[in-house]
Length: 269
Ligand SMILES: C[S@@+](CC[C@H](N)C(=O)[O-])C[C@H]1O[C@@H](n2cnc3c(N)ncnc32)[C@H](O)[C@@H]1O
Image (cartoon, rainbow, N blue to C red; front, side):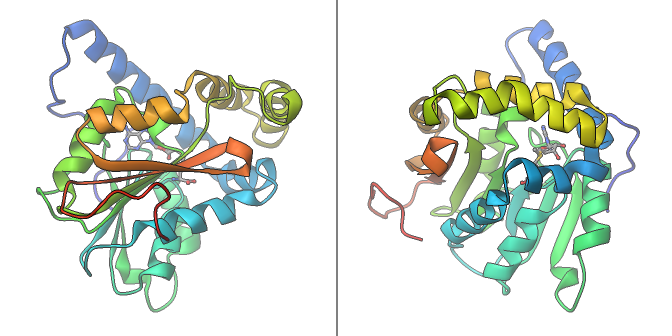
């Protein structure tokens, strides 16, 4: 795996933000997020499966299906964590390679130990990197994903800009993320789960209530699906659409780097 980890995300020449203050704030936020995922890495997979009642497998399966690479070149899995999406991508597209990028090395290391096995193991490449400064040349990937990662990146526009830069024309960027938790789902049952049960279960299993409070808070603050779609269009993506899963608890947004194809309301899988 590339780059040593000292508990902070890799530094570099971030794309300029308007003032020095937000830039420092974003750097601090990045460090906090990288540390937090570093801490919960040993529990991350178990808690994911338990807290989603096993639905996360299905969500990642749907995400991978929607990517439909434009060729047999590399795919980017950004905020790859413990590599669940990376392995799912490889299962769907065994002819492609997967560049699994994340700035929390303990997450990548755990995933690599547990999941990179068998004859195709050499086709997943975990690399420690910040999603706002991708160590990749322009127009080099045939498709990209981010699952439960975009919510953590500040500012999101920098990650969008980087993904657009590295995608080949016509290639898709598929974003799996929770819908905004500020809307009532299942008559408020889901909101109760988010506010009360999730931090409690997170605390019992991982001993880290703050990480799971952070999860609930970022879900509540996250833009709704239409705002996110608009944000991606403004960032320069073409043909942005979204698919709700699980009554809108999560959404997959599918966007493209501009090419000549036509828009469809529900993307083909
Ligand atoms: C909730 S986990 C998702 C992991 C994986 N994609 C999955 O589906 O399980 C979020 C991941 O985003 C990573 N992350 C957050 N901000 C990042 C950034 N700016 N650059 C790279 N990775 C980032 C974290 O380190 C963490 O591993």
